[in-house]
Image (cartoon, rainbow, N blue to C red; front, side):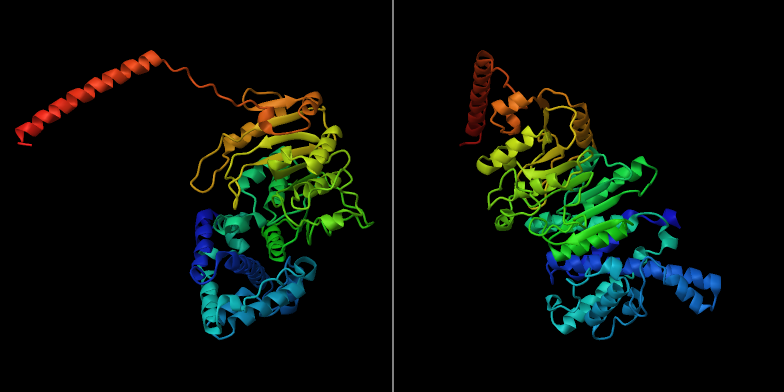
Length: 502
């Protein structure tokens, strides 16, 4: 039946489930309910599919079947599944029943799902009064019982339709979420660009200290699978400060079969959780992030006495946390293989004071590898153009490559996009590491110093286009010709008007 599974049908079915909430509950609230229900339906379908398979094999040997099912990836206690909830959907108390089922599943899978459902309550007053809430949840259960959302492995095989559907939902929620979108989502083409540049290898570890929904990390993982025949010999690490987004990332990882992950919940600057067990920050081969732009109140008070020494190059300004995240990432790169890609506003390239001093030290230590300027309106929630900074622990030269990719994109009404060709051109230029007229420039340390370590891209990549010379004689001749034609038309019009008696 695999040939009958169509991604767009699955996507359409999960997106139409949102109609249950539209006009009643805001998208930034109902996204968590939709995504959690998709996860519940998926693990219930897998559980039921495997149970039915064992039932065919072993008949009434219920003890044997129960023993086999206890080794499932996710264990579902009695009645804690989508089907039981669906059967009782017409009864009062849908919200309470769903919450109890989720908590029972969490307790039965505490090693994987500890606290994942603690920030979501289907019994919340956010869904309205009891009768309205019960009706909403009945419709939601019916939405997910549609044949298109039958996610049994025997139906979908090894296709990644469920993970893709989850990503599709997250992307659409981001498009609707305005400024809040930046809290949980990086546009897929930007993630793809960063992952290709990082070029993660088999056996490596990757980290995103502000991981949101985890999509950027998973793009890095895909590089490994593509290069090494589907190998999953890698590990993914992340930290996220918003509880509901952290839970979203955990579910996203499991739906993509990325079980070898460690995603922590907490503030990366004030309380980094990814340590080596001896009180030191853990180091990674690949570090990627799209941190919040110019975050106010990022934790300057605790940074002054940071026990990890992350701010020895300087203390970022208290109202702009961009370099706080950058410096954290620098400290978590492995000594030889470590490399990082971070999205940042253009201000990090030229702002002075403490940021200027930090920038100078990063350059003098030969950590900065490249600066890539991106088009405007790529990111959800902000129209400002951004850049990607690439840093490496082991560089092959002391130069810094500047790429101005800001003028090449697919234009959209609300959102611009990088297409495959745009990404390929950036990656090719990055790897070639050569100057290209009006697109890329390889700057020497002397040139950087001459510019007082200001990294503003136009200082290095000249994109000025000379305007074509204007032939004033030709313009005057054309003007006189048009003037004569207009006079002739007016004379003709006067004649018509006289004939008509005007």
